[in-house]
Image 1: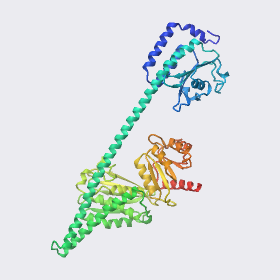
Image 2: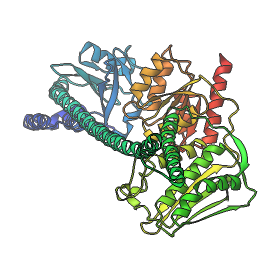
Image 3: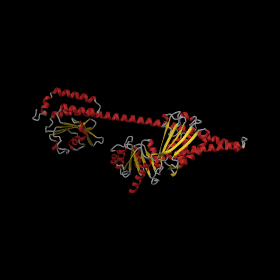
Length: 567
């Protein structure tokens, strides 16, 4: 026992007889060959070294994927300190030099070695042994053990450590190969799942397309049949008709023509919105007057079915700033649906009032209702409930178009319904509309967003205000488009599949071709520090989801103006 009360290396060696050493080395060999987990292998290597050689600290450094730097992977016995251990480039410090030269280095006092990397001298090691961690295939890293006092490692200790390191290197190499294989298998499995989802989506789109074509064929042929049939009778005098019957034929032709026009307009309007070419013509008008105009158009439909139709606006002088024709179209779609799905003698009503500086309109009925499992699907294009397709004409576009028009105004729409007890559709619109200082015709914006609904909403709103909007659904596509096309602004989602938004932002900012491209984070991450992380990565602004449509357009417009001012 030395004066400090600690066991010296010499005393440690005397306590270890040959049989103990052989037994320990045998256990080390068998355990190394049985483990394929990297962390488990390295932790075992450090524990085995501690059983054979006396030291104060030990660290294992692994070569980074770039093959140029060594980073601490594990420490012993103070495992919690691994994050504070210095990082070395190959050739830097004693550790970097030993790894680069692939040589064992044993120094009595590391602080006096010219290769020593400057550290806090209060914690600096003295006697140090560094051994490259090298398999027959490649350099993996390095192991270093140290003593706080000058007590050089003996040749026996070096030999014991060499045995451990040699066996550990093969095990580490195998563990890394196993880890890479597991990662690749996980990636393949993820790609398979994504492919299955994509195939399911393609099949669903194909099914919806087929249903749409079948529905459209039926819906177009029905009014065309009436138009062509009655017009042929009148044109060729195929049937002797009284003046009253002739008038009835003309009314049928006219009604069928209007129905055909409505179908065509629905399809065209929806395609305009999806392409971002639907423009709103804002005007200030009385809500009650708009309701009365819709009532006059739809009254005959409700009277034929003996349905009581009531409307109430509070206050009666309530005004809104919106596109009046689109506002009436929303009301017409909701009211016509309510009347279609309400049995004879039922009731349909409209209630409009102010709520939190928004106009809130509810269209209710005592109709057949909508099952809960279908309520989140009824706004999808071409979607129709199976229980109603045989009873009511339609292509399944009305509610989808209605939702898009409401969203285009900066509003929201929802439904409450119970089978057998009717439905209540409620939509809200800003009373003052969406104020945008200027329409930015031709300004190009790239939206990098993996969520389909979020993409469509942003594209719809920005497209309606003159922006040319391009879409990327993941980081790789966004990187390619940003490098190969010219954009005035990028809206960047943070949580993207594969390459995340912050990584992509850094890549774009480090590339001379895209370094000046303004990037704004558009993310649902709203925790403390998220915005600062985005700004640190190179974003010029941060917009949180869910977006407020009016504010969103103003924010984007301001970022574009700032960009223009710098040019």
